[in-house]
Length: 104
Length: 153
Image (cartoon, rainbow over all chains, first blue to last red; front, side, top):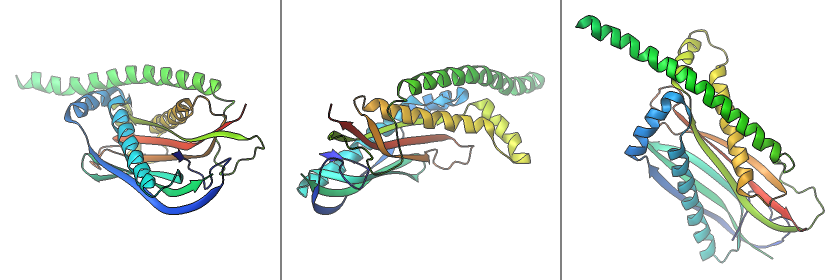
């Protein structure tokens, strides 16, 4: 599956459009990580635990989007966008969406 | 007894401020050094915000490149912001935190596709994941993503 965030797939031609596909996941913070992050908050800088958490979440959202595109018979998703929203205290939603297409 | 409690109540925040000031400063300088170094290495691989490829070379591979980082400001910077809120204006101490994070995210995005020759349509997204508790900026996540293009050799 080819993923791009431009409206074409460079070097290939789009032959069929299948429409919007999306994948999302809602993740809650882990209390242990939260305590560590609280300590890290004193000296500032990167919070690796949270970075990993969100990287993982984004990967899962992307996988779900790809699975949906696969079902439609697509071999590429173009114009992929990510968005993050805080849906509740201590939980974040990661959304990935794009247009499923067939390229040759 | 009450005096002792008072003294501790004053000393703890001062100690935290001193700790945050010293370590925060050192960590920030180190981070900037590491970013500058890695940016120099990757300067030949541009990340552009254009969507179209202005290159005639045949394309071998395209993939989505993503880089992200979650950061927070240190205790001292949050303390400074308390003052800044009184008179208004730019909060320089926070600007540097976000600037660092954004550059780190772009560098990570580039590092995730070491064979790419170009990064098209680079997007930057910032989101606060503190859950809106209202205490400063809390944690901020910066995501950089783009289409990594590799040309045929």
